[in-house]
Amino acid sequence: MIKDWKKFNEQKVDTSFVISKITDKFSKDEVSKILKSEKLAWSDDEESYSNSNNGEAEDVALDFIIDYFENEFYSLGDEKDKVVNLIKKEYNI
Image (cartoon, rainbow, N blue to C red; front, side, top):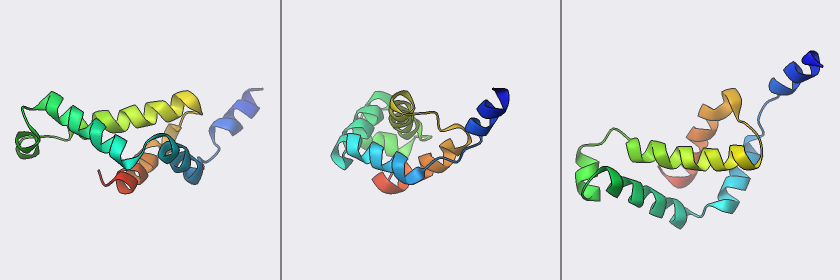
């Protein structure tokens, strides 16, 4: 049983499936709204945020998207950073 669990955990993530499910759930407009809302939570306006940010709003938005996927489907494990980069590319974050 432990051997099977180890084998399951070592499986590679199907990034095409992940991105497909994420883009089905979150349109580009919706992600833009999430980002705008987060930027305003971190600063008075988007311009102020752009001048003095450390990517906090982007991190929160990405975590929100990743959490959705992991709660609905499966953990991304070691592939999480790879998926985050694909999400950034897909949504121009």
